[in-house]
Amino acid sequence: MLICCRHNAAIELNAPHLESGIFGKSLTDCLLRKGYGNGFYPALSTLEKARAFEVTAATTSVIIPVLNGAAFIGAAIESVLAQLTESDQVIVIDDGSVDATPDILRTFAGRSTVLQGPKRGVSAARNLGLRNANREFVAFLDHDDLWPPGRHSALLSALMTDPTYNAAAGRIRILTDTAVSGADYLSWDGTHQPGFLWAALFSRSLVNAAGWFDETMAHGEDNDFYIRLQEANMRMKLCDVDALCYHRHSGNATNSAPPKSAVFMDIISRAITRRRKSGTASQTPPTSRE
Image 1 (cartoon, one colour):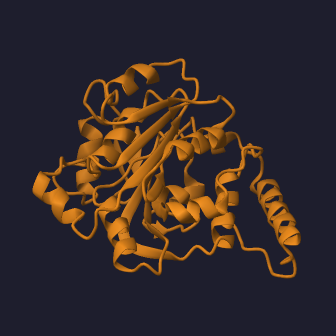
Image 2: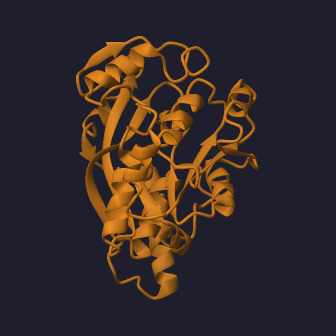
């Protein structure tokens, strides 16, 4: 079972993608109740796409790492493709999947680029995606999460209409399996969490300035990257749009992560070390999301 937190609606999760094309009719129905219009991933007409992107010809690279994600990866890719133009770029890094993931990825041939990952963890996989990304903006998505409709056009428009910003972020919506406790995350539903990278869109120049993901970190690499984005003079605009459906389930990597306090101290220690090397150690280190 899956819980959509906005309306506390329990729904049955059908076999995703292979049976229904996305996550199954029941999830689509629940997302309709969340106010997402006539279907969770409506196909955009040529005119609608033209209107959504008429502010610019700017393009985006979306980077999606996956490892044994057959239950979710099809839906994640579909949610992204429904919002992009042919000039955008979807890069999926398969980091050694042994389930049906490769078969599912083959169904997206011609609409996405699939790379074979280095099998050194999610940070190395994302960095491989960055090395192959060549668009002006960058977005990241985990294979088990989703883009709500309208997310991309809203964030892109925010950056293009005010070039003083180099990042834009929207609200997070929480989807959680009934078998998994999502209590720690339920308070995020419908809120902005600026440090949650997957709910944001970044300029490529900012991402490059931050130095990409630290491949030596087993946990907290996203928090560390967010702090380095701040150190690289990130100027983020918070937008009035749902930008991510974050799925809490039994397979989340954070379920087996060390205590948050230990991860946080490691991140802050790395930030202090960087500041000492750059001669700015007297400044207070930026805080990470918890």
